[in-house]
Length: 288
Image (cartoon, rainbow, N blue to C red; front, top):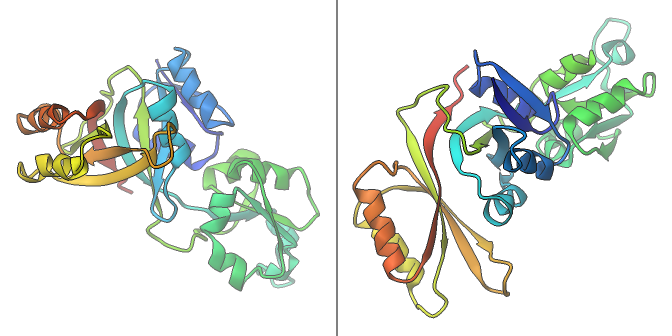
């Protein structure tokens, strides 16, 4: 049986992980902090870590990327894109009027993780401007807090799985500001992922430029350009050594099992760049 570490049960990460491992026997280990997720796999307690790395609305999750670069040496084994659907959750009987319709005026406080809250500003601004908002460590914890405080007029923003886990109602479905709100997840670990196959493969590399080589980034990009290798993402992050010193994470739409990509990386190394292959892996997209 495979084992995987991820953020709390009932979270978007939980829903996304179960989608990737559909029909597979997996032992799930849930943690409150992303550090514990990484360390579980790095220490051998689990086979994989499930890491949310990028969101349509909020962009890259810098903390998680820094862990991949600075703290662990675990390769990427797969990536997949999953919808981040948030819902308004509570006890329906607390918030309905005499006709059985939801009365938003009865909701006094809304609790959720700050990222989820930021993705639902239209709901808060138009239907719940009177309600107090409170940030909680996770969407699942916010649902649990609402469950533990009946009769207070509290509601949570969270996942359908979180509502089911704690036995609460979906007051309003899909309350995120944008219907195209997706999160990109990475599967991290030493064990190759063979549960599913894909026709799409990607490679992620970590590049540190030589400090005394003007135009190095231009040459790096040229090594891909003249070979017609497509780059789907380039992100710069501080090296943490000195102000103004950066490394680059590049996602490449090509597997290492080709002639072109290994030769491009050798050309980049030849100008003095440090290159780390963070993984060459299958890519999946959610299909409902």
